[in-house]
Length: 554
Image (cartoon, rainbow, N blue to C red):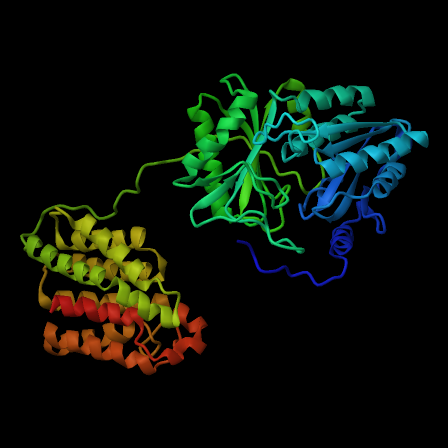
């Protein structure tokens, strides 16, 4: 499955996109009819080798995003997922050709081979010096069919970066031909990828159809299927599966100087991509090798495909020099050296836990356990209430917090302030969301008030502590009664406790306050952004949570 459509209404979206790119910089020029982007600062008479590449559109920032100092001299764009015609490639060759000659870098797809090859022959007939080279770094397809061969994928970008730096350094066409063969050698460069969805093709449906939890391994970048489907259990397991064909091709070893390029195919979230980076780097280390340089980003996409591919390049001294040379084209990601410091030590609690007062901790623990059990049992109810006017996760969030509290107080034997601070810490760290932070604020104020009272755990102290917590929630959370929040149950319960010190009455006040939120318009919290959904006439989930807690206490 894929997205239902694109935010593209122009009749000629490729030329429109190239125009947009060129309008954002004074470094590029555009042959609009032929869809050729070129360097404006290029002086062919200097005798440097020009580099030309390209292919179908839909892979942005490839290929026009590779044009610039230290990269391509010109790029030719076809229609979406379609090779550019030979005439357009020839126009690019004519635009940049000079005494140094032109290197054509072609990604190995049938249409590109034919059209770029035809353009090269026509250029030679006109006296242009051209060499043509084919990128075939795919580790998934291992076809022996000469008419097919391996596909050209992300690894070709690393090859272009290497060649671009060599051209800037004044290397000649013969040298660069040998460099290309060196950097794309089968035992040196390999690429593999996966996708959780196909892409939204303007002209039809993607060929990738997956069930929930499945990914396609070794897929192409045009929406075509890969080698097989794979039921994903973890990111690390997925990476282990992906590295198998890479290992067969390039055979990693401890002495390798490895470049890792990770490419978002268009629809992967940033947090997913970072999880993938962690898994790849750690799995390579587990295989007794090490990543020396890493670059990550949108480099060679497939429209909105939710997936990624990655390339591994074994660098030697010469390749590393060119890979790390300065460049000024936007598609090349910043390269960094892995090895940042990761401190796995937990932050020390600021409240110690001396057992200074015999205050009946076991009885209070039993009460807290009962409240937590009631909240966990109310998970589905709270989610249902929250879905009517929020994002539907209140019950799940509260259950997480309650489970964290149960774990934090299990066997805990300490003074009352430290006991409640431990609850606050569990809510802060494990519950998540604004509700977790607000409840942590409540219990932190609770703990602080008890601490100031020199551990006298009496009813007046507890009520004063609750009052302090409510005040903190209102001041820092910028909410008040009648805002359709947990305060609409918490404040009435507090007033009843201050008046009668009766928990049963406090629980009834909390429930009445929660029920009254049915007719309120949200003025704080996430639900305040969805006022049009207040017509559901259900009580606020946060206030019901407070009512359930007080009823358990009572």
